[in-house]
Image 1 (cartoon, rainbow over the protein chains, first blue to last red):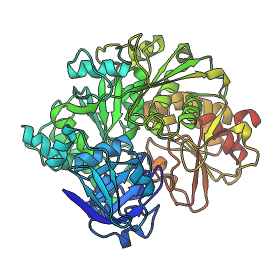
Image 2: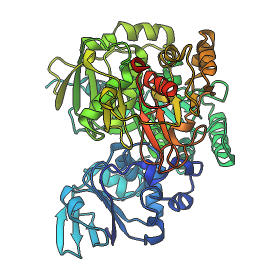
Image 3: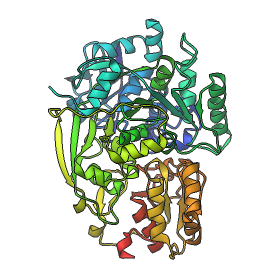
Image 4: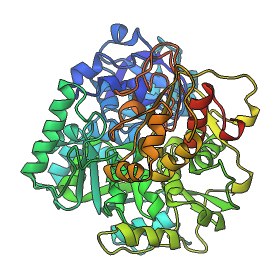
Length: 162
Length: 420
């Protein structure tokens, strides 16, 4: 499985309040949430994002609230993968549970720039920056999490175990 | 190799003699929690499952507290979804308006969280119950759904940071100053994926409400959980509240910690987190220029308990908020509200020019009941000061203790009680 798209780049500590502000949490509809995704940090994001695009950020991506609406909004906006140096732990769990691919890689998160064309191979964990001609080895998931992702999320995984 | 307090609780819940950091385990859950924002998503997820019912109707708590009393039609629909799910599944611990409170103040008060428990909640501040010697951590809605259906959750066993507390805090220093000091020291990802274990004789000088505040904000340092040992104060609290037997766990003497810090509580000063991160802390004595404010919020799962209201009232007694300052006080539960009324605290707030609200998370996350306009500043006893958290993206939040918030309301600018 691969992800391929152009990069939206952000800094440290992108919190769930800017990914999807609480004023929109009176809805749980993915399409509606997606229409406000990243609004408070990047007004242009939703107008510019295309299906398959990739978010690259620095450390502690998704910190703050446990709202699953955050990875849901990102996924519904069409983003195919989030790469960061580290993820906040609840966001990490939520992303796996809903089937939004995420990859931890410090060097990629530092060097990849906005607008770069990037490809991610989830099987090997390798990240290719096609614009720069560079490649990076991302942190692969433990086997247990790979099973959840392969099933398309935690609910399907649990159903498959029953 | 010894285990930390958190590791011992997780090992027991997983039916294992020993666990170590990094190990993936499946643990039995003692309580699964959700609120009006996260539960509807979880309920939708549960509908995708082969098993429709819940694992144990007594071990699920549903607390509509974020946007209640319903702030708009969409919120009302969410609350209705939760209410109907609770009825359909005969959930014992569903708390309707009139019985509800802010979830992390309410559940300990109702005796639903006890030492040794493993608790997940679809709310990041679920880590609050570590104050009682439980392992509790925030998760998302899908984990909540799986927990409600199976009574189990997977965890990666965390390593730990140990905080050795000594000394006694001075008059205007409380749990909020302790945790803000720590977050300022280690950063908003300083405890990422790890436990924060608080130990030492200084713990005995922290009230239960102080400990709830400290454990509550472990997530603001990225922590998986925060946890306190069970002492005489905990036991006294449990005698008053606990509804079931509990088991006390202690860290092994040779427990391995990834980092250790010594904190002398007597040396701490009133501490404030400036916009827009909880790690952006300053002690008030180093703030030279006056910072004018527009609003003060005293409440939330962090600081809406009795100790918090008492100290705020002590500052406000016989004083009045500065002209143009909007002071919003929110007792966290109905029991706290009633007790504050009995003690005359609510009268003090109203006579000082503040308002008193029914329990709600409202302003903390910019939901309602105190949303900020462009350029406005708020001193708040809540837990996050991210961009746009309480309203406009160009508004500002200063996180502080109830004492500092009350003093700032009186002064009309950020200040501490000893400067009034």
